[in-house]
Image 1 (cartoon, rainbow, N blue to C red):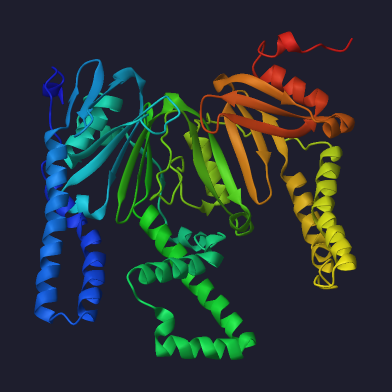
Image 2 (image 1 turned 60 degrees about the vertical axis):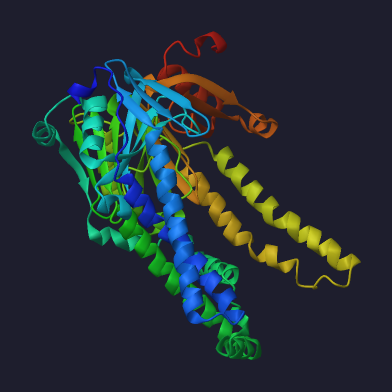
Amino acid sequence: MDGDEGGGWRGLAGRSVAASAVMSLAIVAPVVVVLGRILLGDDWSFAAVAGLNAVAAAAIIAAAAGYDLLRLRTTRWRLTGERLELRSGIAERRHRSVPRERVRSVDITADPVRRAFGLAVVKVGTGEHTGDGKELTLDPLTRPEAEALRRTLLEGERAPEVAAADDAVVARLEWAWIRYAPLTVWTFIGGAIAAGALYKLLDMLGFDLLALDTLKGAWGWASAHPWLAVPAVLAANLVFGLLGALALFAEAWGRYRLERAPGRLRLHRGLLTTRSLTLEERRLRGVEVAEPLLLRLGGGARVKAVATGLRKAEDNETEDVAALTPPMPRELAWEVAAKVYGARPGEAHPVLLRHPKAARARRLRWALLTVLVPAAALGVLDALYTWVPVWAWAVPVALVPVALGFAVDAYCGLGHGLGPRHLLTRSGSALRSTVALERSGIVGWTVRQSFFQRRAGLLTVSATTAAGKGHYDVLDVGQDEGLRMASVTVPGLLAPFVMRKR
């Protein structure tokens, strides 16, 4: 890239036109199907239908290739010693400019079509909370150009063999971890969602599934035998959801590798669509160990980065861009988290302190209210209206043990701790999360105390940071302990607002 830093404007990869033509086939297929069904239904000959479909397909492919060619001719980028610039736009011209010192992450993505053409999409993230217009995208560059640009922006002009020698592998995929893939709620509803999407797609293409004799017979049998049909449908949904979860894990985390080199983290993953993310360590403010309920019951967890400059996940992405690991054994997740946030030799995790019993009482009361209020409302409706089943109020009452169990589990999940460099906070039941946040990355505190918390001697302390979610809460901590913790974590930050007891 040295020769390009003098200010010369460059174009995107010309192979993008051929790739766009191939990707346009995803539009051609449904158009051909719909057009064929309509014309054949109007008694057109097969040869005429085939000819018209060929013309329509050629027009779509030509339009896609032509648009991409025009986009390439109107898009230029350059890398100077101070900034990365992009000029683009067909009808409306835009000029984006990002100072090199503000580059925080470089994300390289290549779907199967672009991989076949040796192309990749480069997304350059800044320290801003990324959203629309907050990141600079080069779509596409050749793969060597993308890797060279990444090295220049984040690592300097080191030779690839030197960079590889410095990289230390923090974690590498073990296919045994795929056993954690089904431990998500999507396993149980994914089959139904996929079936609904397929039905809607076929309906849009003009296929009336209920008009088919086989499906009519199946529907008639299911209506006549609901006690057999419902378990069969649920079992089929579970099987398809399970297969979908395994496939998503394999596609998202195939060839996974997390590497650490001086000053940066590099994440590689993706079986079909490859993704490569490079993150500056100086922008890392901590790590999060996430344990959704089903994954926690299975002994698993996953690690996420708490960092500035990470872009938001797009609609077609199934994984959080902050995810550093796939679901893995909990003990290994903690080891990876310690390596990521740079635990020093012999440095132990801070001990998590339990919260007052008043926090447990609050959760038990809310759990009872959650089920008993609906039960009382249904009881009143049962007394006033005949259309309400007499047993309706019993359903929420039967859920009382479940609600109380979640309340106790949520209390057991509360904890906080303070280490030499990090603040730890843990909370949640359905989604338990433990966050290790760098004390130096805390820029402010928010102290909240509701009327009921004040009566119980509790409060919630939120550490404000420029990374991740923007704030991390220590829920329902004792009033004195919460203020003491905030004062000690960042000395002097809370001092003007705290009055010490004499």
